[in-house]
Image 1 (cartoon, helix red, strand yellow):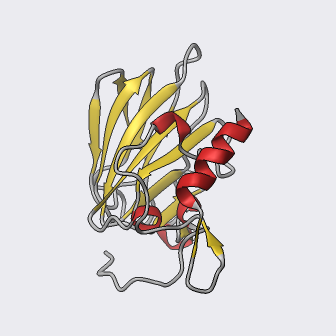
Image 2 (cartoon, rainbow, N blue to C red; image 1 turned 90 degrees about the vertical axis):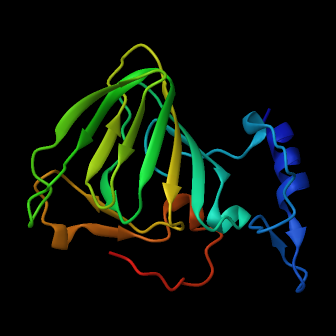
Length: 190
């Protein structure tokens, strides 16, 4: 399986730039139709996460949205975080919990609201609302399709719900864009 994925990845993603260097980071050259099960996946240091960028700004040249497929193993969760973009989710399989602060405290996120999420449910996260997705189902994976606006996204992570906003850690570029990110973009961040 590893060699097959490597072969597919190499065939579709590695091209030589004008300088003759190999690059997996393209803004063109990807097939219009791709098999999702053959796309590169990674955990990016988050235990229990499997992430694939289906359509991305840095990887594929998308300008207005990015689309991700993420699978969280039982007990796995995203970091507590916020970003200056809208985010829409579709739960493809499994169930879990969305933790979300709305009208957050001016100094720290505060106690989040808990929302049950389940197969065929959808949910939206507004700009700059601190949130976390957690697979609280001990029996099966939670698989979600994620669509974000305004890529590439700047993410601020928190150690807990009472960490001051001023102490939140900036992740830019985000894990899966880091290998391909080359120059800062001019943005009107909130």
